[in-house]
Length: 171
Image 1 (cartoon, rainbow, N blue to C red):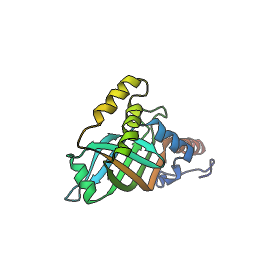
Image 2 (tube, rainbow, N blue to C red):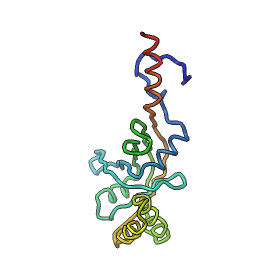
Image 3 (tube, rainbow, N blue to C red):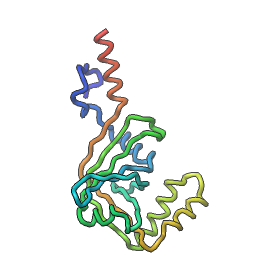
């Protein structure tokens, strides 16, 4: 969208997508996402999970007795949604990805992932992060590797700017 484009309404909010650099900053600034899958009956279900974003993939963890683990083994199509609320970016930025999840339980993945997640959650307390990583290493724990295949992104600052420009024309 041209920075000087006048808008008439909010019918097409796809005009307000996140720029790549802002999206990258959001993924770095946040450490929680909403993880969404389908249950046996086909209903969408979601929970908040902590994550690490690495090499274009989202990584989360859960104990294997959680219903979401059986569900994604049955149907690996998932969705993750991340908002800037509570982060250094302020509110009104969001991105949602659809993708496929692989359930991992290999020691190589656990060795890098547990410390990385613990550090993301406890960035200012290395001792606490180390304890957290040790507690993560439990017998039934698995790791979700989510590979995004599509996205929807929104930047409320762009919408606000377009609204302000258009309101000035209407005055």
